[in-house]
Image (cartoon, rainbow, N blue to C red; front, top):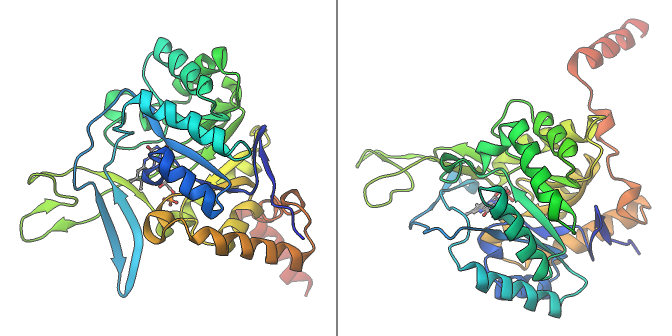
Length: 337
Ligand SMILES: Cc1cc2nc3c(=O)[nH]c(=O)nc-3n(C[C@H](O)[C@H](O)[C@H](O)COP(=O)(O)O)c2cc1C
């Protein structure tokens, strides 16, 4: 029987399926329900200085008869008090000591980073994920993707966190950049223990053609948001492959973006992911999708004769070459035929 146990830079979980930092991880109650259903880990909804979230803040893109191809949001970090989140992290860890609970963090100053790292670790978090990916609202305040797009700043902040962190530090990258390997390398240089990608892609999901306002409409106004769900999977896989192939990216990767079933997860692992994170599919279908994800992954591994996830991790990333080189080899194959 396949063994799904996962270890990402020292963060252990019974399987590679983690909930991504998002609405399904905004409270201890939700995360305990998810663990009961079978999820192996959860990245808590990003903690920081409390904000106010607007309503409506979601939008979906349907394509012909398909609901829903992509999902758009203008949500910020958690709007629940830090003290309550910390208390709930403690409770979840007490009930689920073998599951991975990772605190997603986003603050501004060095002092704030030091304090929130200590708070999250004192509450019992198994690891930290630094949110350098949020492409709306927080980036205008100098956080989120504003950091993810500036490798030097990213490296500095990872360094601040590593000054006090005792648990593994995952650096969550933004896809809103031309070359994802630049911030990935900065994460390595800053001392990060792992990277995760992707966060959402800056987007505008639609326009209300009667009222002339873009979606989602909040009190007659709107703003750009972040795109995720099945539509972003090809972009996420390409960025994952680019990082996994890069000889300088020597730390493990948690893959995120459009994963909704066991087959998607296998693809991410084949491209080099150690764990996979899921947000939109859980918001759409509920925590119960984990049952088929686990069963499907076990079945696949048994059929292929893979005893552990290490047996097939990264098997496909080396097979994807730059076009110039593959074209050359394909041409010479043709010439020899
Ligand atoms: C409504 C919503 C809120 C999110 N909030 C956060 C957040 O607080 N912190 C974070 O790092 N990512 C956040 N994300 C991004 C997800 O964690 C994930 O990176 C992204 O949605 C891609 O995964 P998916 O295609 O499975 O949804 C959010 C996504 C959505 C849809």
